[in-house]
Length: 104
Image (tube, rainbow, N blue to C red; front, top):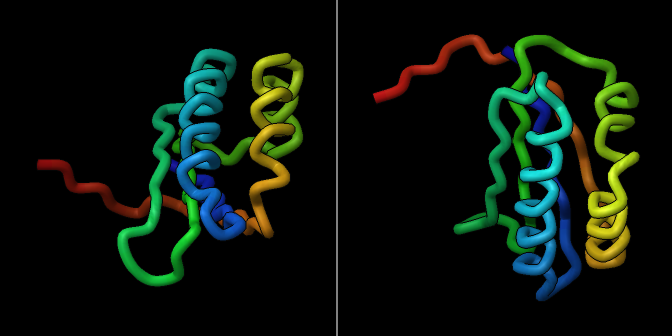
């Protein structure tokens, strides 16, 4: 399992709006891309504030541009990206191999 983690460093006071946009995008992405197994959106409780973290789980690593094509053709997704883009200072992306998951 591969996890794509994107950390969005929001401008001060914009976290709620960015998180709301990410939640809307999650619904669009999971509907448009059947390779997505899970999509999570997190906000800070401690540490550096004004961050939104999204995680997408896939069975294998898909080229990011190929995966993005499935979403960027969606007018609603483009509108949301344009809305939240100015609220974000910077972002970083990580691709992680899931080695173990224990559920209760």
